[in-house]
Image: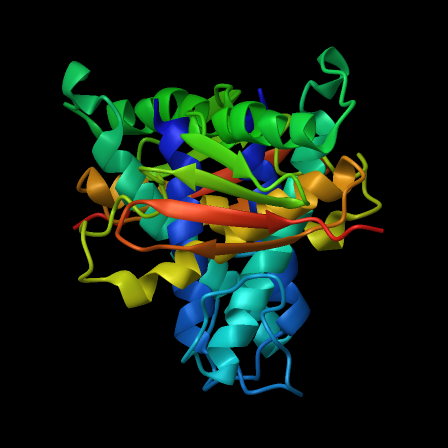
Length: 173
Length: 173
């Protein structure tokens, strides 16, 4: 019961804590792979970067524990499908709603009711608050992909709450 | 599967993040109700205090969601038993191992294998690292008690990893 909401409560606290402090502007650290921070202060960008980093390490650790031995990852697309199903269920108790790709290394994962945005009102009202609730999850995806051997850049965008799109770009090596 | 470890991964990251920054010494903020910080710097005490505060708010929120309507909390001891069973199972998927009281408002809750200490080696080797892994949970207990209408002071102590004792003191009003 409560353990399914425990992650969400803890995530909320973590965001609030990191945002409250708004750390001193550092030497131009950017949020890197977590987009949508237009207009954010340097401190807020650092907070996004910290959240993304925490998500990355949790994603790496989760990636090691997910039952990937049951799947044969022959193709990149299989890995992305795995994230949309197994990883999303493990973290959010639901599957991603859709997965699209241009077949050139760019994937768009859409969650029509992203749990970490649900506590906010729907619509456009709190749209500018959204980025800080997405950074951790961007990192989570990037970390899980990293464990599975794929380097990526993950950004998120919200057009209307609580719909969220995660864009995964895998540079061709 | 992974959702049971998600909380633990996230907690680990949170502790690491707050400890890494070792925030600037503030105006004498003490860790308050989270003991065992003897020898800690002011910054570390603030980190403990922050962790305890996050735990408190998560505990409050969890306390509101736990199925307490099935229980009649006639006595303080019933509330403590509820924490040892329902709250602990919700958060750690196990019950507390023992609960003792002096019947004068002091309760000692013992977990012989506290999950947040398990990643550390057993014995005495990393004992001084333990307090930062206890602060959040001290707050969690205090927050849940607060939601249930009981003001308390919660401290934790570790004599040998991974055994942990939480002491709950409820001042007589």
